[in-house]
Length: 460
Image (cartoon, rainbow, N blue to C red):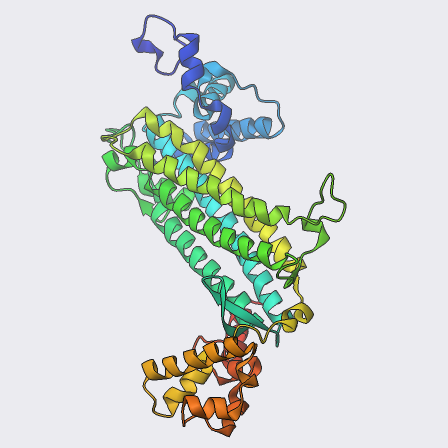
């Protein structure tokens, strides 16, 4: 038991089955860079307050750098008995430096050390996802510009509703992703408080300088309550919640594009590079990447659920349950990073098919709401105008007419004296789109402004 950092209290060795059950080195080894970074900052702080000499500090910092190099090169031995990445690195440092290596853990516990490492890792991961979302936003804006002038049917309840500009459609996803990026930034802000120095749960009697360490590691401040630090995994849960919304947004987008790429819709041509074929049907071109983007949202939702259940009912302060936070945290970030990267590839390579869209664009009475609003502007109450146009749509269906414009002047005037011969000049999807005026609508002038705004904001 002498080889265990906590072995002084015990007379008997640890059961091998317990070691296998409690180890985390199989998955937390990916924290090694952040453990080295945090430990080097801690060593510099110990030198700053006089608990290490400068030479001792330099030796520790150098030794940690060498260990990092060994891990990166694949030359570092990982063994079950050393439990986790933190004990591996500390033990390796002690092997290099002797008792000097044993000084590094002064004024800290594995509890605050782990929390610091995971925060550092999560902070970097948030920044990577944000960069990926920025690239995806630019892909959507570029596609919005590439498809300017194309009108597509907009849907509610997956039923044709009103005509919208394709540019307006693509920019809708840019808005969603901007909210996603805002949530990541908020999560990062709350995360960025230093846990190190809270020790096991109560702090330490050693005169450390936590503000110094915070500056060294780029934290905005120092966590104020040591009990809270030991039990806090809010930052992990909030981060994964933000990832879950990203995954859900992209799952909805993927579902729509899967539909649009079918023969039944035919709105969208997907690039061959992101599709696969069938082992038995030679004609097939399957949107597998989009299907997996849709499917992998389940993994991220599962990670969030795992973390929420993990902390349910945990008393203050640290409990070993919290070791289980890393697998769902890592998997959620890994999944979303991959999804965002592939989503950008799809958006960059896909193109609308205006020929197929235009074949049926006049179907579905997409200009009905515009005609209703024309009546409202003539002084007809909204509910009355809604009823009048509803009856006209029903008349079209009974007559087998696909467009309101195919109604006769008599049909229109009979429905309402406000619908004179000039009414025909208001009908059709192009005129319906041109009639929009409100801010944020699909009005061509408004969409052009929004496209310019996003190009400027995203520095395109």
